[in-house]
Each structure stands twice: as C-alpha cells, then as structure tokens.
Image 1 (tube, rainbow, N blue to C red):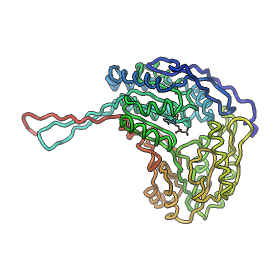
Image 2 (cartoon, helix red, strand yellow):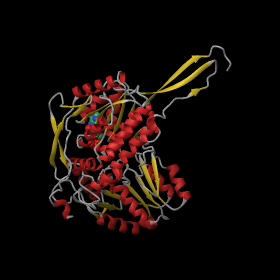
Image 3 (tube, helix red, strand yellow):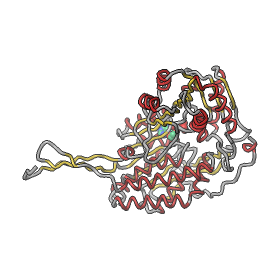
Image 4 (spheres, rainbow, N blue to C red):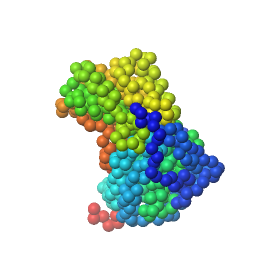
Length: 497
Ligand code: ADP
C-alpha cells in the first residue's frame, strides 16, 4: 500500500507526437486549441495534445475520401496491403517497450501487462488481419435462368471509428485491423483520456508504407469531434466502442445524417457463475481475475459473481483473502497487479457505487476506500450478500468492486443472470459437461467462457446481445463490418447451362 504514495517512477519513453495526424502529416488543430492528458498516478499533466473539432474532422474525412477514391490503397494488390500490415506488426514488435510505457503512462495499467500481454497482442492482431487481406473474395451464385451471377466484396469506403480509454491500443487494433485488411480508409478518434499511444503507432504504420490519408487520427472530445465524425455525410461506416448511453447517441447521429451502418461495442454486467461442483480455488482465482483485471475497467468484467449456496461461505472467505493479497501501486513497478483508475471522474463514480453498496445493505468484506492520498488508486473491494435489485448488481461500475450473490439452483441462476439489459459475456465454473452445456445455451451473451475468462484471441469474435451492442469484432465476423457486397449479373448468350 505504500507504493501508491511513493514518488512516481519516471517512464522511459519520450513523447514525440501530440498533434493531429491528417493526410500523413502531424498538424495542429484548425482552432489551435490543445488539451492536457493526465497521469492517473498523480492527476498531473503529462503533456498537451491538439484538440480536434468539427473542422478537423472535415479535413480528415476529405483526406480519407481522397485516399479511398483516388489513392492506391483500395487498388493495390491485397498481397501488397498484407505485406504493409506485416511490416507494421514487425515495427510494433521492435518498439514494444516504448509503446507499452506510453500506454501505461497515459492509462495507468501495469507496465508488465502492457509490455508482456497487450502490445504482443496488438502485434498478433495485425498479423492476423494481414493474413485476411488476400483471402477476401465473393461467391459465384447459381440463379434461375441463363445468367452468370457473382458477388464482389468491396471495401465500404471511409470508416469513422471512435474508441475508449480502457484498452487504447487493443481497441485501435480491433477497429483499424479489419478496416485496413479490407482496403478501407479511416478517420479514428481516440479517447480524450488516452490520446498518446495511437499517435505513436500510426507513425509506425506510415513507416511500414501505408499511403498518406489512409489512417487519420484525431485527439479530441466526444460531443465535439466524436459527434462531428458520427454525423459526417461523407463517412461510409461508423464503429464505436464505449458506454451504452453514448452508443445510443452515435447511432442516432448516424441515422439522422446519412444512415451509415454502425457497429457498437457497449457496456456489460456479465455474470460469473460458480456451480456447486466447481474447483473453488480455481473459481476464486478466475472470478478475481474476471473482475479486477485492468483495474476493473473492462466492458466484459465478470461483475456479478453468482456462487452456489453449498460453496458460498468458502468462496467468500477465499475471495476476500485473494483481494487482500492483490498488489496495488505504481504501474511501472514490477509485480504490480493493479494501478490507478483512469481519472477523477471514474474514481469518484466508483467510490459512489461503493457507498451505495454499503447503504443498500451489502456486506463490505474488504476494501471500500481510496488507497493513498494521491492519484486515482482504489482498494480492491469485495461485497458479499449482494441482492439483484441493488445498484451495484445492476449498473456497470467499471472499477475494482466485486459483487458476490448467492444462488440455489440452475434454473434460478439462469433467470437472474439473464435479468439485465446487457448481454456481453458470461463466465461459468463447473466440472459437469451437462451443466456447462445447459448454461452455454441459456445465457444470452455474446461470449460464454467455461472454466476460463477473458480469452481474447484475434480469431474469437466479440460483441454483445441486447444493449451491449450491435455486431461482432475480431475473427472472420469482423470483416463483414468493412465490406460491401455487390451482386453482378451477366446474361449467358448461348446457354449451355
Ligand atoms: P466513458 O464514459 O467510458 O468515457 P464514452 O462512451 O463516453 O465512455 O466514451 C467512449 C468514446 O466515445 C470516447 O472516445 C469519447 O470521446 C466518445 N464520445 C463521448 N461522447 C460522444 C458523443 N456525444 N458523440 C461521439 N462520441 C462521443
């Protein structure tokens, strides 16, 4: 606990890019405005970045339009595009540690997690999409008559992409990877809390040989730059990851402007179900990981831990002990599992939920308060005796707060687990194949992890049921988001068909 109050460790990376990236060049915002990005360890300013707004969105969209309509990118061979993406992945790999340091500095996540898991995953994602680039093709379709019918799978055009702050670079890759593999051009707005790492890697993409205007990056705020992008008449497709409330806004902006198709990856309140036959030690560890990973700032966090009554008491005791053991402190220090929350707004919101949990009668097993007196650190918090109608069991807290609920039988837990407006993910712990199968088929969620959690392979599709979103990212499913299907029909003159 002392770690949170010690002097912050100095990151070993220089910040090179703070401007907007438009048409292959780093430029100031048209307004000349900038805004600060903060270090979550201290709340102090790291640097100031250019603040993009509607006029910059216009400039970026016209650069992307030109690169799509006239540029080489959609016209070059898919093999060439694939090779550029592979070179990009190599460059990310080469600069792994600097990129990881930038990510941790701006976001607060443990450096070891950035350097050993997330940046390597970024490399893997771009290699995965490089592999798709030259394997995208249409079909030959049998028709009732003397016609030759084929489909062309064409890039959709200019993609607008809006990403959040919890996994700045992974969200970048989930969006940019499939869009580029399919031959689109992009205007991407980063989250205002974490603008730095995307600018760094975008520079590497240009070094890898991507033509100017193919990827444009705007730092800026949601209601200004984000809204201008979502409502732009010359953006052909919009992809958004963020809160459900903002998802509704961007969907409406897209509909009111040019009806651009929209994919949304939104909030969640995912159940993690520990059955009576589960290995309790393993279940405790995975349930802990499912909730506390990334400071609890995951849209798919296992934030409702349902535990069978027969193992409930043992589970509570062990979950509490595990939370007490969690090492929280300066994310640049070795062995740290949890850094600070992203900013004061999230920090205050989480503390408010903790107070509401106590007031509504849940049992605070451990944690419940800030850690240290500087930055946005929160003690790993565990509530037991949580009831379905409490707001800590219904709302997305997005912080290190585990809510444990007791259940008696499968039918009951299925009903309760599904009794939410969300449907992003679910975790199940059981040794019974039958129980696993029943739960897998009954849970209304885009991902069901059995005896594991947060497995994020590039090939595994991810997305939500209900108000957790529209569409799927990653895997083969993500390509459809960035393709148009054109049916081409030609008559067969001398029918030998
Ligand atoms: P959070 O509450 O976690 O910050 P948001 O959904 O507000 O989540 O933010 C996710 C992304 O959406 C960020 O890039 C943010 O700037 C952007 N955003 C926020 N409000 C709007 C808006 N009105 N229009 C477009 N984008 C927005």
